[in-house]
Image 1: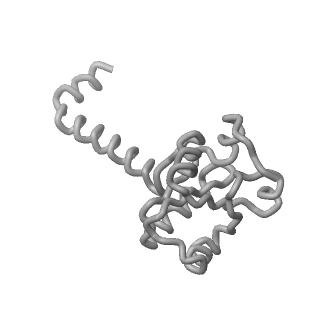
Image 2 (image 1 turned 135 degrees about the vertical axis):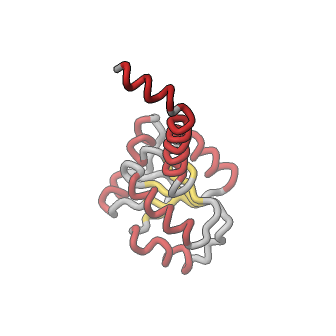
Image 3 (image 1 turned 45 degrees about the vertical axis):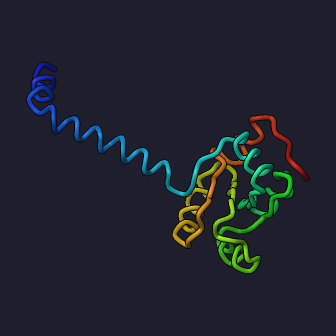
Length: 137
């Protein structure tokens, strides 16, 4: 253990740079796919900015309960849907799936496609339900 602390003290600049890079990497990876919103922030964005809510879950999960006003779109047809509906690239979009992981990867694709205001409900529909917010059927 003494050699570990000796190494750190002798290489303080390198260790500090390594830690700074790790923090930057964690922050960068966390921001990929769009801004993460908790359900309350998502509700505010829907009500105040008229955000389009796209539910990426399979139709049977969507039918069992979804966010009011959301549109069910399969992930592989997401960009095609946005193009056919002529949704402006600067208008807010909120992506939701079961746990938030599919939304994140699809958000990356939309950002790469030029969409500017992509948001993901952190934790997906499970977090929405866990917050006690209503679902439509």
